[in-house]
Each structure stands twice: as C-alpha cells, then as structure tokens.
Length: 296
Image 1: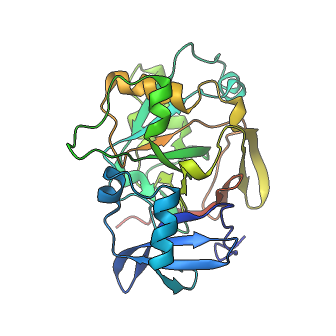
Image 2: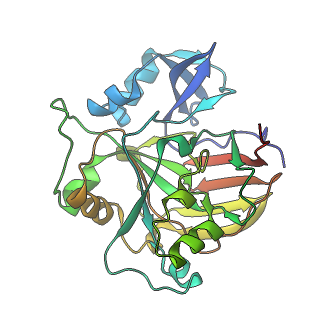
C-alpha cells in the first residue's frame, strides 16, 4: 500500500502545518469549496494562546489567504507541545483484551515531544527492539484558549474543560507492547514503551472544536488496507470534559497541549513495510509507514 494515496479531507474546514521551501507555514482547507489556502508563516502556539483558530477565525484567515495546491509535505499540527497526555483503558473492550476492566477514574500517561511524527512520515522501530510494536488509533485534542497571562488552566470542571479544546485531530499511539509488558512485570514505569522517537504520528488536519461534534464518531485503524480497529467515540468510558478535568487536577493545561483520548480494542502488531491508516469520521486520514532503523 502506498503512502502516496490521495488525501482524505475533513468534512469541515480545518487547519494544518506544512513545509514550503524549508520553512514552516500554516494552511487551511475547505473540502466543500475545494480550496486549500496558504495562511502564512504563523506561530501556532501564539495563535492557540490567543484563542484563535476557532471556526470564525479560521474562516477569516482563509478568506485573506492565498490559494495553493494540496501540500506535499505536512508538519505536525503543533510543534513541541508542552505536554502530550494520553488516556489508558478508555474503551471497555480494549481494557478487557488485556485482562483488565475499565478504570473508575481517568488514567493517563505521557508521551515525549520527540515521539511526534507528521502525516506521511515513517515510524522507525529502533534497531535494538526485536519485540512486538502495536498500532493504536485515537481521537486527538489540541488545546487552545485565550491566555494572555500565560497561566494556563487548573482545577476546572468537566463543563469548563471542554471549552479548552481548540480542535480535533487524529493520533496513533504507537506502543512497544512487549517492552511495556516487561516493565509492568518488574513494576517499572512504562514510559519508554510509549516514548520512542516517531511513536506518535499526529495530524494532518485539525478541525476547530466549535465546528464539529465529536461525541459519536467512527474511529478506524487499517493496516495495509485491512481494518484492525473499529469503534465509536460514544463508546469511550470518559468523555473529553471528564478526561481534561481529571488531568487539570494534577497539571496545568496550556494552549498547544496535545491529548489522546484512548484506543479501541483490536490493537495489534505492525512490522517494517506496513502502512497504518487512522481514520476518524469527518477528520480525514492519518497515514504512516513503518521502517526499521539502520544502525549507524
């Protein structure tokens, strides 16, 4: 299966980052109008901190933008987010496929910024890792809200927390599964199984949260065109508000933070040569290959 497959565009206008002549730029797409627009060399972190890139703001930026062809090189939507937090066991069937039950409160863990990988990039399995690596399709949240004082948000309610989401995107929480199991057996933290470089593909598009209802969307993972995972966001144990409220009890949520809402059942191994596709209904498709690192 080729990574050069046609782009699947989101159902609502969306924004993305791309590279042109070696420089990062912000773009917008409106599939209904059949239009891509170059929005300029914008600082996404600053825009998210200003509460920008919501539906109306994006529409105005696209009106002023310059028409362009579909990009050939995407970048991750938010460069170097302050935090990448991910929900664990947020689908009952996924928890049970590993012999557990759904948690009574949100469980979350972190991935590191160097795990981030854009649409079209290759997940690189380290040369020393010779055990199972799994795909995990997920709905991703990009946080963004007016925060001129740079203080972020903490101790928010579930109702307040939902308003902190600037947009929805796609994410693949690639996991070194055997390594994770070994660390659990030894009662070690299992950060390393989630934190290997390139183990968090994300993007390519971000749909503004106020333009889209993410309460009941199909989530699908395909490997080499074969469906491996399939569920709906309504099946999540904890929704967006509850998850963010739990996180905000422990850490300050800031514009530009990236949140992964958990994966459905059906996670399974990928090997070099495979092509993974995460599809979330209305958000497009995130496509990445798998290769093995060549030792230096």
